[in-house]
Amino acid sequence: MRATGGRSFRPVETALYLMCAVRAAAPDFRRKVDPQKLARLLGSARCVDMLLKCIPPEEIIAVWRSDLDRFERNAQRFLLYPRPVRRHAGKAGGDV
Image (cartoon, rainbow, N blue to C red; front, side, top):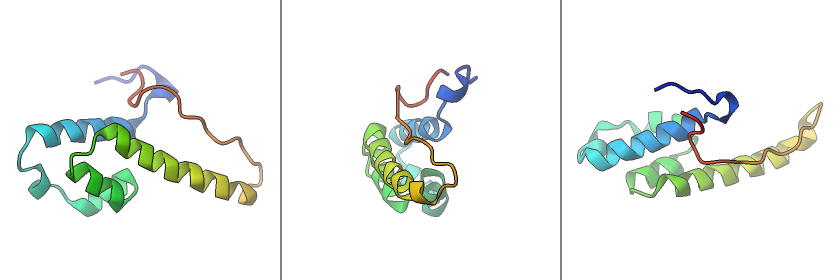
């Protein structure tokens, strides 16, 4: 796999799509994963729980985007040089 889109490539979202594909293909996926390591990758135990419950990746991404947007809005007042809140464009994974 080679990323050609630079800034449009979203490695964590791409990893989530790959994990969902592996989860669908491997019946023993749940026994072989370390939930703590996945939580570090995905950002929360809630997202790991969703992954293990076979929630579609788009729904998992929507959850963490919502949390990230809330964090960025709250963090604005602490930034020396405030930046505009990011807009999420395009499908997860970007140009691959």
